[in-house]
Picture 1 (spheres, one colour):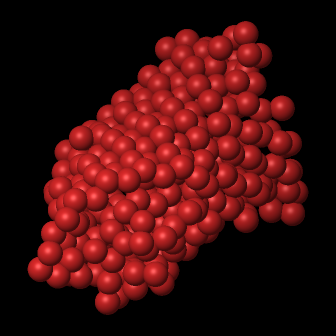
Picture 2 (cartoon, one colour):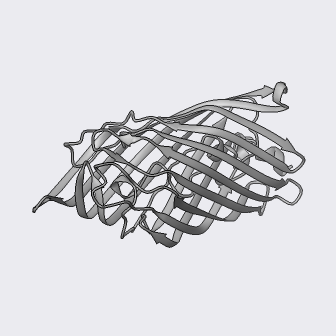
Picture 3 (tube, helix red, strand yellow):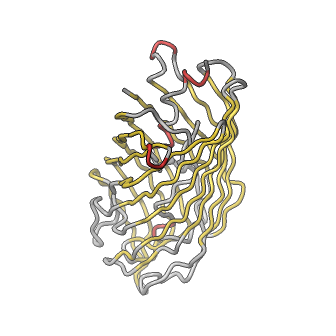
Length: 316
């Protein structure tokens, strides 16, 4: 009965929202702008690798972001004392087919983000210093899922996919703040889930390798990254679950390019927290609301703080 109720809850992961909301962070160095296209804890909350039913699915992810960094490179300049906040809304879609040829299912999809970002920073350029304050609203970097494969054997489920993040967001080196990051990212991801529908227990692990191209406007290349996200959930009823969540992140290649004026940094971080899932009975199992909060317990050359994500999903 629990399994029937959960047909739409996979969507938070299968659509690969790739969004989180860092808050209260500090002492950040690696990655251009002290971050990258990997967002901790954003690779799913519930039934992460379970194949969705064939057909179209849509979701809307609304997020808030507030962060501080002691120093970072933005738009080719060294910045000290960065304070930024953001509001994003991602419109996501996925289409799923049965794939007898691979004894599983196949899907394609992606997301289109709209965002608002504000920034206050002290800018250092040569021997001079100045304060910068700006805000921006516009299109963010579009995500594409050209291929996603699903298999299962009993209670074990596997999802293998490629995520491409394209530099479609508004970007100008002369602006103090930008919606887009102005480089491509290619994330190869393997997700596995063990789910017992009788007990309502789930254990999931997601691992990924993200390769980034250079931001040609600033000649800054964020180094290759590996990341792991995990979830352990227990359904307390047919409609509500609680669980533990976490992530581990590490740059296996340092930042490079003539624009990496703060040096060859490699970031790493570990975070843990809580998650929930709700599938209201009134929605007939076709609507779900999932959320997650994570707290960094370790960070080096990377954002350190709290992350959260909230996703509403509908399947037809």
